[in-house]
Length: 224
Image (cartoon, rainbow, N blue to C red):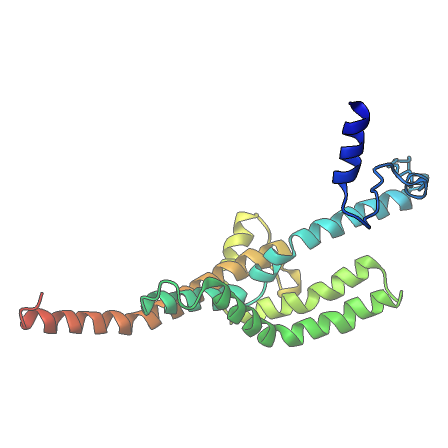
């Protein structure tokens, strides 16, 4: 009985000409030596190693904040707000998408900021990659073109600079170089917001006038 069942199972399990499968693992596969990955921390042997670790941590933090810096210390903020005002003035809900508006604002920002970015590359990144300057010197050289750009965009309106200087209880600066960066950046941001909203409202007013004229015509015709 058992022999009959065995013969029937052998005859009906695989078609003629097929090869039996093997479920056992090959020695070639099981014989692979996997690397042993370990994570360890060692005590610094000198102050330079501590400084390098801190610099690396600050660099990673700076890369994390890069999108925010691109938005806040460039003219991207002004372009994005003005384009959004135009979209709302035209009563467009989905067209163009927000991603398209951000792309337009990004490339317009690159066009306006290209001389600044080129100066940062030539004076900071390129010498640093050639080991001609240190990281601290590269940071100072990269900061200078951005500071000049922000100061020029203020266009003589130093009210925000005076406000933040008084809030920080700092003495009146004699020239531009004495204005700290942490004072210049928020002053530039508020100035860009003010200018962007002024431009947006000026673009919005004609559409409001058109809506009022159309509404008056429809009311006079008794269609409202």
